[in-house]
Image 1 (cartoon, rainbow, N blue to C red):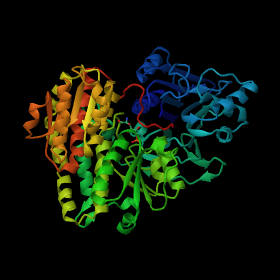
Image 2 (image 1 turned 60 degrees about the vertical axis):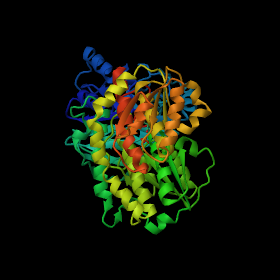
Image 3 (image 1 turned 90 degrees about the vertical axis):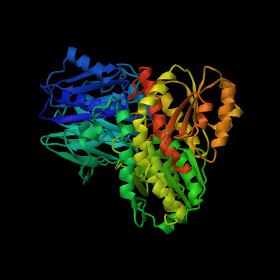
Length: 606
Ligand code: M6R
């Protein structure tokens, strides 16, 4: 949540900062700002604006900051204080000589603010962040790194900080606990950023700052320390992914690009993980025997990843006969869960930074569970705290609405289920061979996207949607509804179709649209009965049905066809048309598809 980028070097800082901010805008976009030290090295210039980064750019065009070789900047997702200009980062200290950007939440900020006020400090904003600049001011005794190191000891909560000061105008200080922060190593220039894409066109040499570490950065040198001031040997990583992965490559939105990438993501996974001798899940660090010794599995995740986990429950229970429960990570740690050494906990997270999931992982470990994570972002916080990892390698997902990460998570759960069940079994072998066809099925669905667009546009005027599914496609209905509501702002609820008669049916009349996942399966006939119930109440029905199913046409208003696959694999196949449907509705309504209001890509606050 929130994006940070900082620069020190020989180039002009502001264009580098603005360019980097644009690549981090997916992390939050309700206000933004830059703070630079001007060429006299005597003055900090701050520009801030509410709204998108384009507003900040316009402001800087009309009120230029001049050339500078050091600066920090921030794009915000508001937690403490409304998304106004005054609450935007960076925040100056009382003297105007220190300026900071922050990602995270300072939980004890009120206590600290009260104490600082008593000591004569005055504050301009409602943010938790501003107290940090005042604390650094308080502790500054001629060494900026020492002052930051002292200040962070007073803080409770999560933070990634970037700090510059006219006291020491050739230094950039970074520190982190709980919120991601990387250092990019350039030639005669260095960077800090919340995520790799912000600096990928500048350098591929990265240091991942760890929790409890801080860095003193000049244009020629990066030194990493722990908060006690002891120097730390930091590992330099080389980023291998292509810069095109973080560009739209001609697609109108990242979401569209990422939906198109799903076939390749699954194909790569098949190539890497399904071998002649079985399923390769090396990252989990467990033998087949150890894996089979767990008495139960608990899946922890949030949002879309939670829906992937629900698919995993159906699939693992069906194939491997191990009881699986799925917890919204935000609930897990507060409900006194029954977890022990015989429990395998699987955390699922695209970003690997979701605070609720991270807290759940910590709680599970505290209770003795073995924790593995299904994650997309290499080296992320959740991965680092887990005992094992299964990387989905879906490539950077920039659109706030998760698409390729979701299908990659589901695909990984299928592989895990195959492994747990024993891939040599006839039934599993058959499923694996069907699974291998999924990339080709995605290509077929994409050929039909004009038809999905037509159905979406025809139905985009509805003020409320229900999404219904049964059995393994109940999570598909939940995910279809989440996708639609998050990018189009149309109220949409997902239900197990059998639950409709217990309440949601009251909503149905000619003004409601119901999307029914009605692919051919064991529960097809039951789904048709539910469709009849909707029809009898004049609801408009859009069915996701299996290609060749003529029967369904009689019962529904619109049909979106998907290719046939095994019953159990259908969530993988129906995901794509549901994503496309949400996308086309949102486009028709003129919504900001990649950056829906109020949301941010990774939610690093509880
Ligand atoms: O990075 P994570 O997978 O942990 O994120 C979890 C949710 O915040 C995320 O899936 C969210 O629900 C997406 N916006 C859904 O499209």
